[in-house]
Each structure stands twice: as structure tokens, then as C-alpha cells.
Amino acid sequence: MRNLSEQQTGILLVTVSAFVFSTAGLFVKSVEAGAWEVIFWRGVFSIGFSLVFVLMRRRFRQEFVQIGKPGLTVGVLNALGTVAFVPAFKLTTIANVTLIYAAAPLVAGVLAWVFLKERLNIQRILAIFLAMAGVVVIVSGSLGAVNISGDLLALWMTCALAVIMVMYRAFPGTPATGPVVVSSLLLLFPALIFGSPFQVALNEIAIMVLFGFQFTIASITLMEGAKRLSAARTALLSILETPLAPLLAWVVLAELPAPATFVGGGLVFAAVIWAQITPNNDKIALSR
Image: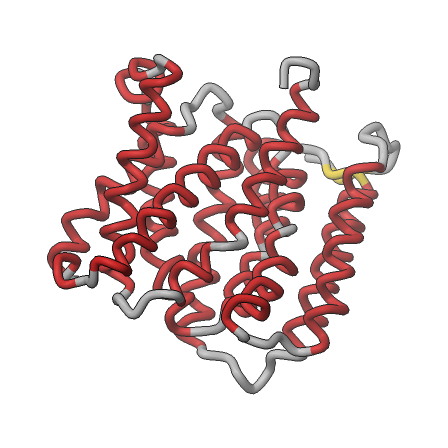
């Protein structure tokens, strides 16, 4: 990592985050426990793994004592996103959740343009629309099997994550691990009230240990990467998850995607790769 530029490091971290996040639906759908039970146990183990990570790096003061208002805000936003994220997988297909999440480039890009005055070069704009075209193709193959409640929750999650990306771009000094712990802590008490986490079978708790580890790695790499990239590029890289998650659901859970998923997924990958190899100094740009 020391031999990479800040931008290259950001690209690597966000790409890793997208690959790790693509497995989230598998964990949720592999257990019979309800959404609040999953939120509770994932939160408990995420807190544990995060604290170990912070202590190993000797960054307790930076991550928690000096977390600041931006860090607390990110923690709250992350908690709000998690409340929607887990039940969305319970109520609709993995493909639908990840496809709606792919709207993050537009949401984050527009928010950064409005609030941060970030320029959007013409290649990035076209790449975003190419990616969205891929999403439209995939959605066209999922029509008729849509659970509106799950889809609305997925949209809620998408908006929360887009705002988090912009927050890290606006306040790059915001810690990455502290907000993950804050978000998990905020949800433990509601999960105890609305769920029954201590009635979950031990074998399912074991699965959620891995889910907590997955969530910790994905969240930290995303937030660290978002500090180093524009909001539009962060969001665009993040939608690598879009074609991966449905394919994993097909391989592991036999949740077969429609043929359109493969076509649309190819367009999404093409958009992400194209956006990374085009120059950043384009003469034509949308700015404020």
C-alpha cells in the first residue's frame, strides 16, 4: 500500500469493499433468524472485531475520543442504513436489493455536485449512465417479482450510503472504524426490544460471527477508500457489487437471476472499468 498513490489506494479499498459487501445477502438469507436478531448479533461481533482492529493499530484515541461530529453523524447514518439493509434482504431478492443500491452513483454524484461543488467530467457522467443502463436491463428481467417493501428499504439504504460517501469526501479526517462501532451500539437496544436475539440457534449465531467480520471489513475499507476518491468515483466503484451479489446468490443459494442480470451486469462492469481508465482532466465537465 505504501507504493500506491492516494487515489490508487482508494480505488483498491473501495473495490475490496464492493467484493466483500456482495456476500451480505448470503449471510442474511442463510439464517432463519429475523432481521432484528441478525442486526443484534452482527452488531455485537462487529463491535468486537472493530475494537480488536483499533487496538492493534493503536488508534483508540483517534477513532473514538476524537471521533467528532462528522464521525457521530456517519455512525447515525450507518445505523439508519443498517435498519433498512438487513430486512430488505428478507423481504425481496438479493438481486433487487443490489440493483437498487446501484443508484448510489447518481445520488452521491448529485449530492457532491450540489453541496461540495465537485466537478463531474464527461467520461464519468457517461459511465454513470452506462451503469444505470445496465441496472435498467437487469430490473427489466426482475419485473413481476418485486416486493415493494423490500425495494423501498433498499432505496433507503442506498440514500444513507450515498450521504456517507459524501460526508467522508467533505470531512476526510473522519475516522473509519469508530462510526462502525457507534452504528452497531445504537442498534443493540432497539434490537433487544423488537427482536429475540437470545432465542437464536447457536449454529446461526456462528454464521453471524462471520457476518460481523464481513461487515467490519467492508465498512472500514469503504470509508477509508471514500476519503481518497471523489463521491462519484467511490459510488461507481461500489456498484461492482451489483452484478456480483446476484451471481453469488445463484451459485450458493440457487436464487437464479434472470438472463437480463448477466447482460446488465456486463454493462455495469464495463462502466466501472471505463471510468477508471479515462483521464481525470477532461475539458468538458459539469460544475457549479
